[in-house]
Image 1 (cartoon, rainbow, N blue to C red):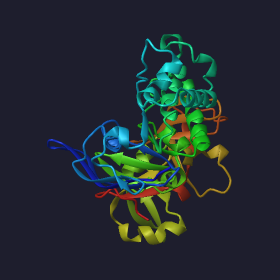
Image 2: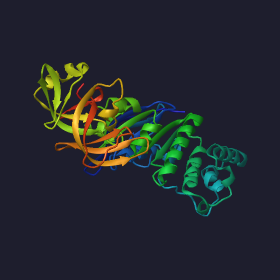
Image 3: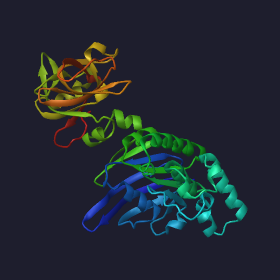
Image 4: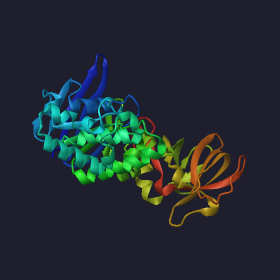
Length: 366
């Protein structure tokens, strides 16, 4: 098994820098997810590691070995792409065995590896079928199985669930997480879906415009985003942002949006003191906004008057789109909330979990 290191890695396409001074160390057996919007450079970073793109500057190491000049076949990696890329005229067995046969591996060893991979993926009964006889989820398992049989040091997965329907995506991401534990191998996984990242990763690296924004565990990334971009990208629905000013009222600090004010918790006053009188961005996650009638215990509440615009009943919760003056926001409230369009309501912001970002740098204020 092996660790992976990106050491000041750049990738330029003419005047465009797709990967900009990337520094990441992936521990042996870790499940790292690279996440970010389309075009941010995450797939390019994966292709650089795989040897499918040439590095402009910097080094990539697998274990202690610099692999910049090694061809893909000598890097001891296996890659699963967004498209299944199966040979339509070959059986499932032959698709999975194809790479091993090119290496002139012993037939008995090929069969052992293919049957082992098929067993852990639950596709043993499908080995004689052709790809056209398989569902999308089964084809994806075959593509993963083709990588498993190589027994690589590092698995690279580039948006492997994008072609699956919503229900199958949930099922398959659980299977991939289980597979990582069974194989005890280093996984590097690329996705634009932050839900996939949060549910699967040991750590998440958030990338935007080729720059690494933050790398952290899912919980720390959610609780302590380094900047406004990370805060808005991680979490669903996304964090609410309000233009605000930190000011003093009745001897305490408040964040004033012009439409409503919320109190700054006592534990945050030291960090925000230097921003008194200055414009900031206030961030509150939808799950930290509650119906005042069903306020959870053990939160630090600050009431806000609002008007309901749209109500989405989700069964276990209600997602309410509301506004306070000209400020629009989203709340995830108790399912007992009998909200309807146009209702004037009292909502409660849990300010203990509020976030404040510098208006100019967009860095988190702590």
